[in-house]
Amino acid sequence: MFDRNSRIIRDGSTLSFEYIPEKLVGREAHTAELERLFSPLAFDGKSCSAFLWGGVGTGKTAIAKRFCLDMGAYFQEKGRRMGTVYTNCRIKNSEYAVMLDAVRHFDPSFPDRGFALDELISILVRSVESKKEALVIILDEVDVMLKGPKKNIIYQLSRLPEQLSAGSISLILISQYPLATMIDEASMSTFRRSNMISFARYTLDELLAIVRYRAGLALSDGALSDESAELIANVSSEFGDARYALEILERAAHVAETAGESEVTPDCIRTASASVYSDVSEVKLNNLDRNKKIVLLSISRAIKSAASVSMTKCEKTYAVVCEEYNVPAKKHTQFYTYVMDMEKMALLRTEVKREPDGGRVTYISIDNIPPKELANKLEYLLDEEVRGETDLE
Ligand SMILES: Nc1ncnc2c1ncn2[C@@H]1O[C@H](COP(=O)(O)OP(=O)(O)OP(=O)(O)O)[C@@H](O)[C@H]1O
Ligand SMILES: [Mg+2]
Image 1 (cartoon, rainbow, N blue to C red):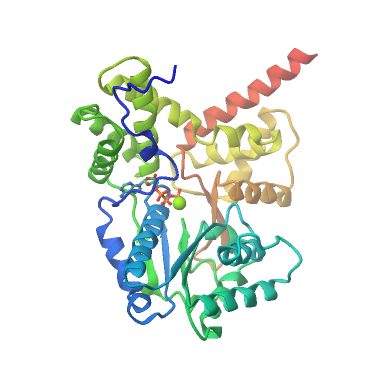
Image 2: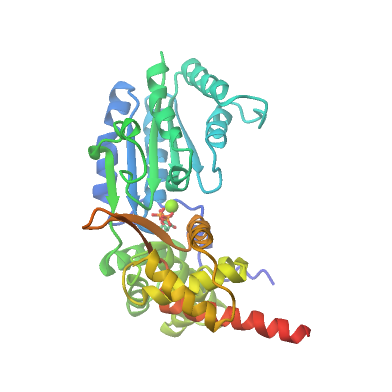
């Protein structure tokens, strides 16, 4: 038990979720762009802002955190104060919670209630001034916040620097989707097009370089052959998602370790990738009630292999699926609410598009899993529910 003589894994912590790699392979241009955007802060102490956007696992969060760590070291060298507040808006989903995180950066025991939002804002401004701090606020998954009625937060945050007589408050916003579709003109002015950095999905070669680099940190020398590294890059290149690749790497290393192998074999990778794939959203799907499962099944069937499908088309498929499962079809407004709920859970994504005739149509897409695969899972879960019910009778 607790045998530390691992043959494969040298330092598993470097594959953990919190680990921030020293360098982000293949993202040198993105780092340079961030540096350019933040040079007024480094040189003149001016508040700056950047907006990072792109698909799942394209390195947005990692690059923002790494950049702030490196900038913090630069400031420290110069004997200046810089601080970072990282807030994930999927978890802290209110303006108040975001401001509270920032206030607590200065006063960790600040009470979680009892103040108005405006008061929190002035406390934050006063703290930054008195410490003369270069504060950088990272708002991750900010799209969650911007989709709701809380859009104002960006405007408020972007106006803070004007109120400061000392120090600065800079912003790094991160989202899977472009900003223009989510915020109003006034807030948009802070985030000019030139402040935006887009993250493309990783190519096969980029994934290969990432897998090699991270395996070099985490595994023993020679534990991952070229052939195995290529296999991981290949299976994850469908998504261009580094997280997916690293999850396979981690699980494959554990499979190899448990099996007593001296290296991570292609078979270990196949076993690992099958389990990663089936874990994608498994928990979330299990938590959906029957109505939502049926709605999601209809959407995944309607999409087939297209990139997205209109809500109207989904509802037509939905009517058929309801007959198949012998349940009455819900009305449009209820269907719409289900779709929005599932968007919040990141199971699907909606986008309103303007049609040639000037009308507006909502399109639905599923990004993280092939729709066919999702449909299979849902059919299985729905059948399982029925089996469960008959067992109880
Ligand atoms: N270029 C890279 N070099 C090394 N590791 C990387 C690179 N890009 C991403 N990673 C690693 O891959 C994982 C996913 O990256 P990250 O969390 O930054 O993705 P993201 O773009 O924020 O995705 P999401 O939108 O799903 O939050 C992290 O563990 C990160 O350390
Ligand atoms: Mg992220």
